[in-house]
Length: 292
Image (cartoon, rainbow, N blue to C red):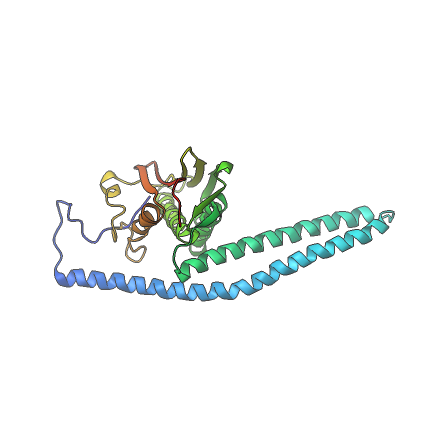
């Protein structure tokens, strides 16, 4: 997975120390990037808030439509002998199925918006029992669709290997969501970079897996992108370290993700990679950690 390019790498044999002015200019550029991101975040939060009301109306009217379908069924009991009843009954079943899909997807959209607003508010970490598999699937798809919105040519196969035994896990969803979004966005970047270099026979795949072990929950996000060289992997979790082009990343995502998992959730975030083959990030959440 392609991380971001460091401004200076003191461990490199070709390292040339930067002047104070150059370091200051670089820091100012990064502060500017963070400021722009903050502005975008505020704008996005406003848009999400405005979307909540129409989504609520859609969900409420879908539930009302389902109730009305029940009344139609009662009327239908008196029309079963009508010669066109079979066709009408089939149409009613189709309508009921469509209404249920509208209700389910509006509820899913509301959950996503609530999660994103919680991140935007940054109102502290609240640990609650959370359906981990649902969270993984929804925020993986959200990250992918975010990339697709800016690059219609980008296509990746999303594979989910989610253990039903995981169930609900007590975690801070607004913080954990950030980790999943960051890891999946990095995976998308990695497979997209490889796709550009070998577009004919390469099939990008991102696999998201969960499993319950004796004393922990394990989540793995794996991509078959370019992989990470050993010398880069050692610096992945260093703040501001990045190999992405300017403007493509701040170099803070993985450092913050490790802090959320290791510090906040008392778990661990690790990475395994073979250059040219794959990169896999593994989250380990201990089951015996009690959050107050």
